[in-house]
Image (cartoon, rainbow, N blue to C red; front, side):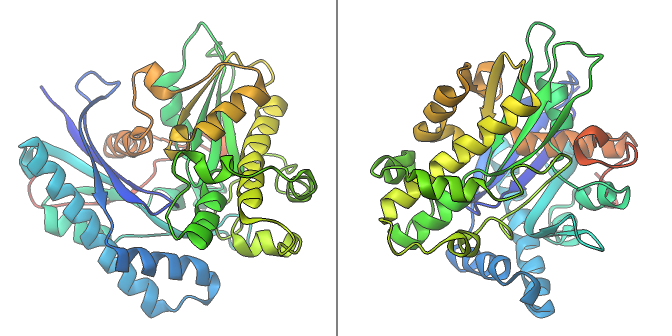
Amino acid sequence: MPEYYIGLMSGTSVDAVDSVLIDFDNNKGSLVQHRNHPIPEPLKEKIHTVCSQGKQATLHDCATLDIELGGLFADAVKQLLEQSGLMPSDIQAVASHGQTVFHHPDGLPAYSVQLGDANIIAEKTGITTVADFRRRDMAAGGQGAPLVPAFHQHAFQVAHENRVILNLGGIANITILPADSHHQVSGFDTGPGNTLLDQWALKYLNQAMDINGDFAASGICNEELLRQLLSDDYFSRPAPKSTGREYFNLKWLHKNLGLEKYNAEDIQATLAELTIKSISMAIQSAAADTNHVFVCGGGSHNPVLMNGLQRTLGLPVDDTSACGIHPDWVEAMAFAWMAKRTLARQSSNLPTVTGARSETILGAVYLVRQN
């Protein structure tokens, strides 16, 4: 008997809403349907504006964006249902991560803000919705991120090799999966993945991303600039740790040193190498016995990053399709899996990753009268 869940993910790249339909009848979870739901340009601009304003963003701007994103996510669900031919009553729950606009895990108090009103999702779709996954982990003393390592353990851990799953989105995070299941799973945010590359491409090419890494490939890495960027104390800070674009952004880049003496393409090449080196250093330091690295997220399609990781690590580096899950859908699948666990009153955080005091049930549940 099918057990359908829908997972929604809108990451820091703000390129689209990843929506997936998962059947958990076999427990592992089978990908039944998927869709990249477009984000209208005016809404993208509002997201970027609120993210760039950070602490200066107004309550009005955040509240209205929360409502608009709720409507967008509801539309993504309805389009996926239409594509699949299913009815709302066929779906156990929608899992919505929400759009992160500010992540502040080390403050006093610590907090993380994801927008996309789940009341609207539940009301417009007629499907029970699970959202607000991060804050329960933070209430338990955790960073609230990364949360996907628990799903990585569920989907990708094997007994024959030590694996690292690299989620190469706007921010990069790693999950260390030892072959011996008695050893602890660990992980953390390594730093920028695509976010600086995307922001620099938007500034100088007026395009949302560096397609195929062509912009970076046209330049030459500046070793002086790279050393300066890698000297940021985030990279040497011990885990647990997490970060976001409110830290790694163009203001961070400009404050490190004047950029007027560098060509735009050389800066892009250097930012690509920053991503490669910071990830590689993290893996070599925290998981020196790794046999294989599997990559998911948008960065898995960037040959400059993928080839650079293989060169720097000296290990096999493949995307997660080699493990049976397309790299574009891993994160959305992860939150669908978390929603299933939430409804079953099961935990889905890993204290060894987030630093929480204990395992805890994640997410708030928005019920509907009938499913």
